[in-house]
Image (cartoon, rainbow over all chains, first blue to last red; front, side, top):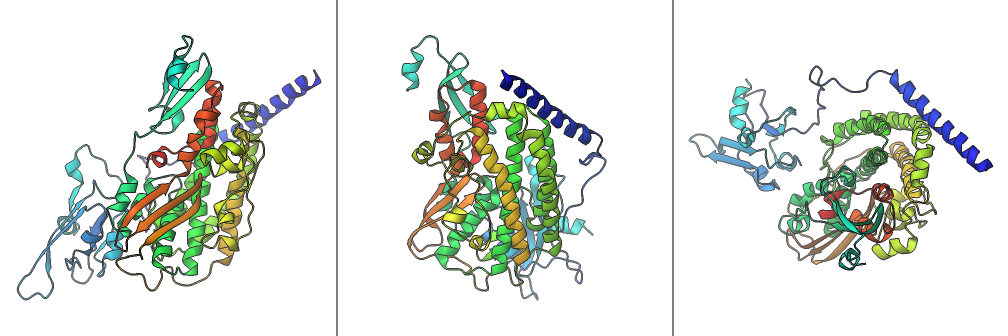
Length: 146
Length: 372
């Protein structure tokens, strides 16, 4: 019988201790971010979808259309098209397509890229109901960045 | 008991737990044969999110299989990353620089804490307590921010590479880890006061869901389930890999074999993770984070290879058979939760339905890893 009452007492005490903890928390400032009104700045290493790096000197991309990003991609979401042009030693990039619906952001394309022509973007507010919105023409995107 | 003979009893009825049920934490379906409030038989039905990860390992190159590792157990993805890269390094005899090994240990242990924190919140949520989940997520958020600043992603990491890590860590990350450890240490007594010593939780867990050591052996259960049954087995101690032998840490073991024991193992494990991280940060050497010579196309010598690591839920092991080509002939993933779930059918017999759910929570299931 004595155990019965000590159980009730210790049980009530444990509940009161818990309540005091939650009550203290009640008066603290919120730890969450009020999202639509505030938003986070992404860290420099944040992995968004890839994009072409803009070369500060030439004002254009550094891609030599070697296709190593395409070959190294586990999901096959990159298509690079380059063509020979007169007077230029390397192939000239004419199209760089990314199918972001398949991408798993592993970063192997960036590891493979010798000239450092691609990087992760910092975009994270991506939402759409249409699949086509995630097929990116990165060359066009680079030109629009100006 | 097969469900056919059991269902001949007219008092029995069948209900489906899942595939869409919050307590199963994913698309797991358990066919329950009930006698009133009591479980007569529980048959897990798997395969709802089977994605053929093993087959994918057999038809793509070694490097292209890397991102798959983050999609098995998405809550402790780095342990799986580690298991796979260490296996391939063993196969191709790639030497990993020491700094990279230390970074791997620090990030993996941080990931283990975040996984246990999420389990803690979700488990108490299963039992009907909502508040601790929010507190645990508050702490977990700090880990995710720290890991994001290094790996670039928050959940499905793909950070380790054959021969090292994809990038170095800054001092801010290391000091951030220490600040976080200080914070979590100060919060642990709060968690124990709020949850562990709570009378309702104690009565829901103590003596519920007995899993004997013999049953663990029978089903191959590992991790906190095994350690909660009184067996001191941790791959980090028993088959050491990476730089774990250099750290001084204990393996928490409880002999009670009930849900409370498994709960306590995980809570104590977080303390041990913090000890490992502190020691690793104190000892981390300078140097490169990638091996100097990593072959572009990895073609390991023909043979049968096996490597096991301690993930947050138990022993994760990979067996790969190589034919000397750039992709595996056979890739077998041994996932801890699959074995841990297997004992549910036997252990849950005769339990009350509410206890069976508490027991399921204490096994800590991650369904994508069971189905692979």
